[in-house]
Amino acid sequence: MILGLGLEMEEAFSKDIIFIRKYVLSSWERCINSGLLPEDMPRLIEVSDQELDDLINHNQSLIDTAQVFIKKIKSTIPCKKSIIILCNKECVIFYKQGHVPELEELGMDAGYIVSEENIGTNSLGTSIVTNVPTAVFGNQHFLDVYKKWAGFAAPIHGLNNEILGAMGIYLPLEYASYNILEMLNLSVKGIENQMRLISKNKELETLSQQLSEFNSDVVNTASMLSHEIRNSLSTISAYVQLLQLERILDPSRAEKILAEVTHVNKLLSDFKTLTKPNPFNFMRHSLNLLVKKTVDIMTPKANMGEIDIRLKLPNDHIYANVDKDSIQQAFVNLIENAIQAMEKGGTLTIRLSKKEKSKMALIEFEDTGVGIEEENMKHIFNLFFTTKKSGSGIGLVLCKNTIKHHNGNIGVKSKVGSGTTFYVELPYVD
Image (tube, rainbow, N blue to C red; front, side, top):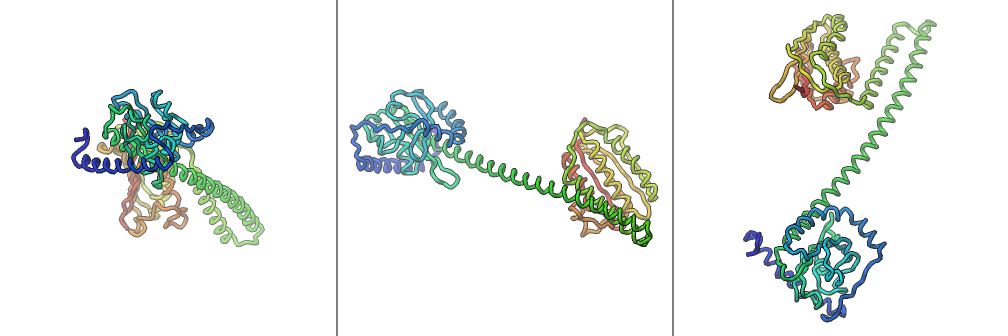
């Protein structure tokens, strides 16, 4: 039994060994046809230093990936007199770890071409030709000078299953076993998987960069258009007021035009905030104080609409790492929504509490307004969706984005005729 292999794997691997021997025999035929004789010395052909440097640069990612696996292999092989090699599909060695002068003199060194026609049957060159993991033991080498050595190699494949090159191990014959080939083959599969992940990551990085550039262009264009439109609106507003003063334009109609201009201006301001949000400055703050301050700001407007705000805060302060201004603005938007939903007056109840299990602070905004139609519930956080005459459809999107950047959640429950509750969850800190 082959050490370290299960019975099923051993049987499959034994079949592979038979095929390997068959490939070695066919390699001998190719060596004879290329004019080699067993007693010949290897035809040592070396590429230039510049070509070797180019090869190393081209294969640097493969080298970096393989080094992790090579380190593990070196720690497993019992013989220090061994080398581990990487070559390309033209059989040019571009990386070698280990130093064995006898093998280096026989062409097993960086820059040398280890094809069958140069050095006869060898694990690296033969695995490239056959495209299978290959082991060449002692007398299986075609040239006599290699017969005291054993070589193992496995081809390395790229994304489209094309051969990139091979990874090989050479060591004295007495230390050789098919276990080494199996270990090498598993390592090469690991290298291939890692290379695929690296390639996919690069694709994702490129795509992300392209999307970022595209988004930047869109934001800049939107900002420019917003600026130009607002300039035009200012001009329109000025002319309407001038016509109103000269009594050329009916006052009621002029007021309607100015109201629409103001509405579009607000929409553009909200849109600018959405496309170019301010950077967040996270600090530890008391949510009790933030909620209370927001309510103080909004109370005069609520009173004008005959809306009673009831604030229910816990005795102990609940703290969270938040950007104070953006969270306060999100709370303002939610209170503004509640006020608009209670045109005939009502009650807005704001509660702050802790959810110990999820480590979240819960802030609820419960109004007694008209409620939200069921078919509209799934759209309320969509950009530009609004059921209000003066709404921009941006406020809730801004709220959602702000809460999301705080690693929180925002949701809504509503019943037509009974009111709506928006709830915000934010991670709290002790």
